[in-house]
Length: 219
Image (cartoon, rainbow, N blue to C red; front, side, top):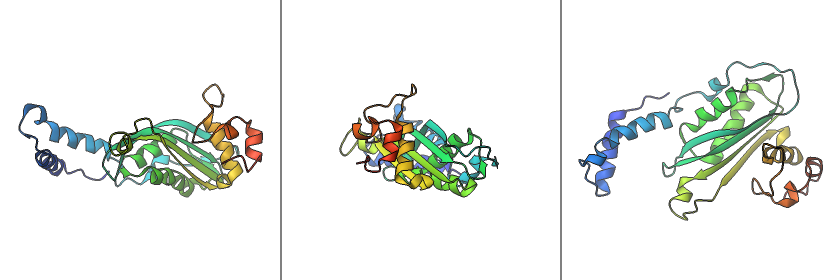
């Protein structure tokens, strides 16, 4: 973790408050600079951390079947406006010679998210780190997030959901990637909703076999 200069953060927060016309000495704002410094030390704790360390020590794979860890809670800060974005991440990979412990996948997401980010970059960094660490035959990451910069400013669309997908190796092939997206789109009972990841009934109304064998199914 990079050193956080709390004194500089506090001074900067006081300057911002003064710049917007606030009274930095009033009771409600007295502790705000220190609170922001504490929040930043948590939100940006991943700066300077090698994300590969989050994956622990790989061990020999005993399967060549798809491994999926879904509904990982994720929160990060957009580097454009320093506003939070939050949602869920789903990570899937086909093992090569080695695998990592399942609990290390959420830790990888957490480390990469704990720095100023752009959602599409974060999505790519998850699969690229996994690919570099254990050389899977294929990997996919999907993030579904609410962006505060979309919800609270500009277009002000609080219900808008940003979905980003990054795929590598065998799972970058369209029909294989679609198979994974269909699996991730199923709810916990195994049912497929009418729409997820921007897809419509043309994809999610079909069974997995049909969806993954018809390369024209994704519009």
